Image (tube, rainbow over all chains, first blue to last red; front, top):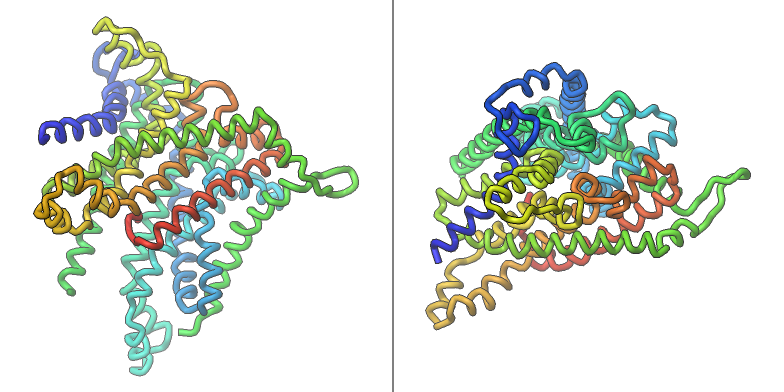
Length: 261
Length: 274
């Protein structure tokens, strides 16, 4: 039985990782075909760093991800504070609208935004892409910040006011530090979602502006090329590093909670 | 704290970029632009019921259903194995499950292109072993494979979350009372894990039925799934009315299945990935 379990686990993990491992290994293959191994090379990485198309899309991906997640974090955090103080009916309505981009299929969100941009005659490009990313990022920020606000002890804020703090000062010193973990989680979530998005970007961008996902898609449609393997390897490493950082953050957060409790 | 006005920037944003665009889709699905203004018509929804398009719709649901089924059959045992691991090992293996999910899904799909290619690695290995070659790239099997590969973690993780929280003493009690392993599974483990199974099914079925990338890269033909059909209408054919009608149908399909699932989920909370 134990052997069977171990065998099954290995099988599933082989299924999950084999394609990624193959991509990584073949990014160092001198031969252009996937069938044979012609020796170790770094030439695909060199080619990658000279590929203007890929470098431009990397620039757009990062720019859009940073700007959109910052703006979404700002708008989302303020919105979460306001939503928390709403009356029940109002709150239900606003939360349902907030859930819409989360629940709606990406392709519908993408198309609906494309229709809007064309309708208001906003040229499709960097700015429309940015607006789309902010739009689908805000709900995730709200959903990460709201639980933290619910945990707040509202008497603390009142106590600060009673002790003579101005509302802004009280907000800075009492509320903000308490909800900060939720804000940072929301920001990281928004950032990674923006980095990874393909479908919504695909419909809301114009010619000349594409993020990495769109470039990969158009390259993959043209066929297989080893530079994509090199790109995958680098992105996989980036994801691993990011994941380790986030994981450390979460466990630190949990440890802090245990110490308080 | 009375700061209601601070909600306005978000409310304006949400109305402008979430609500209005959806109304635009609704608008285009029933209104046609003619020389003298807009004309109301059901024509575009009627077009969706033409046999070729019904076939596409049916195919999308069928392929998504099959991949969900495969994910469930592969994923449930895996979730059980994970939940029975020692604590130290458990976290590591769950993390291993999450890592591929963080990789760009286009690259995950692309990886299968290189593996399944006619002269790809799988066929080279099969050739060395003197086995017949496998030519499933650009077929439905490849699409299902791509879906299962991309969405398997979405099935395993919710089921694992529920199984992990399950009160283990129930299982011991059943064993003490003389139930064999199969009975314990049938009477205790499986019924208690149903919320996880349901959210797993939702989380696999939804992206599978709406995808157009997996079918485009791994599948053959032009009109494989409803997602491809919608993409074609907007980016190639330019028939926004028909595309909008199709999008409305897709939305209804998703919202319906979601509401069915959430009715069960409300009774038993938990099992969500977030």
